[in-house]
Image (cartoon, rainbow, N blue to C red; front, side, top):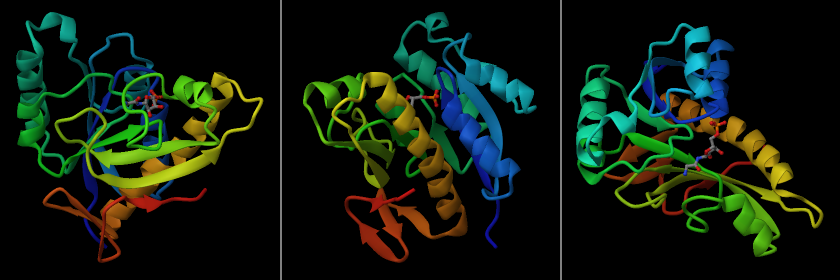
Length: 215
Ligand code: GAR
């Protein structure tokens, strides 16, 4: 059995994805330890969740920093002290600058509520509805210097019903996010997925477009 994963979690809001990772650790499925939770938003409910589970947590409010560079520098220093295997973005609504990203090659993972490369950025559910898409989904990917653009590790699809509203999609998407994020981390811990030179290897095969997950 490979060693436990050491994780840093970055979030800005509710933190339901963080909670799903905690739940998976607590129920014994995911062999991992969350070393620190960092939020750029002092009111993020995710920080309360961390406190409740006795997980080290910190607010680094971007408003207290002069620019992105100084914010990222501090973030880098804090995370380096924790010696983590992966930096997990769980609703972290800030772009990480290229200096930060270069410091953690093959280590930063994000979850995004769309089937990337479709709809990077914000308001993905609205865009799906506006464009009358028949399917929507979630993507877990490695973070590079672009916006939601790094190599894809895995994705899961959902069907979009004709009568569905934005809230229905948000709920559907959260449900699959809470499944796929802990699942991918478990596969990383078990060595089924590896990340080598910015490329994703799953079950010994290099995957260009990631693996599809089914709930
Ligand atoms: C999630 O839907 C996640 O995919 C999204 O923010 C939400 C956070 O929810 N992330 C992005 O849009 C990143 N581009 P949570 O705080 O309940 O986990």
